[in-house]
Length: 86
Image: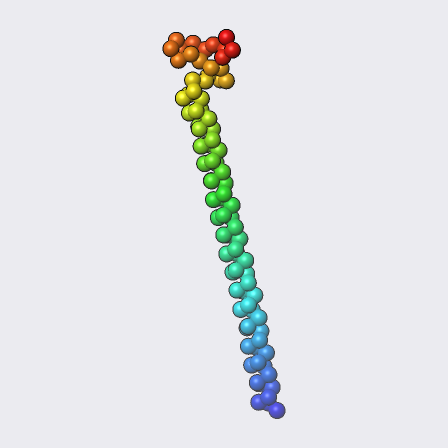
């Protein structure tokens, strides 16, 4: 009878240790997933900032090539700003 009780105790301890190990693994996985989500979020933010800066400087570069100053077409020969309709 005592041997059976010892086996039951050992079996119960093994089940308890297994449950604790699973809980610990689940916790580690959740923390890892959270870290990866933050990493992807910040990567997305950096990419969006890069796209925004590229777009802003691209517009400025295109306006410089076209000879536009603040929405007004400038004459390249004289360098004075004249409205494009005149």
